[in-house]
Length: 108
Image (cartoon, rainbow, N blue to C red; front, side, top):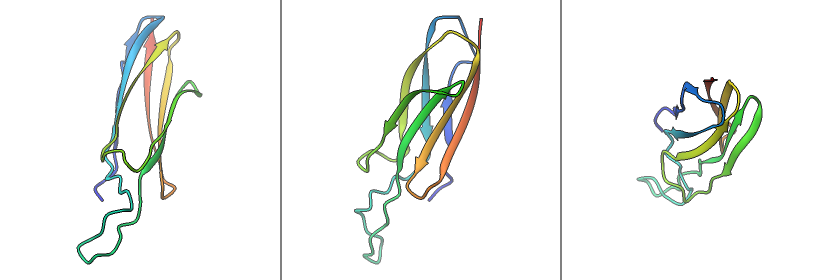
């Protein structure tokens, strides 16, 4: 599998009360466990099964992902910002790995 790398696009600055769009993407093959390799052996399931987004330590968005989701899952969602702080994004893999990315935003 290629290097697993999360990417996040979030604003650096926003006005108080502004609703901002956040876009996330993680490079991941999302193996469903139903395909076979060139020798006919099953390729083990390995998917990102959960995504969570927090702002200043409080969860505001979460989703459980299923094997039918495409490779390199892309998620887009919105957040209303009232104060400056830090976003934390976490992707949970079947193998127990957790991939994390953080972004700070200044609210004026």
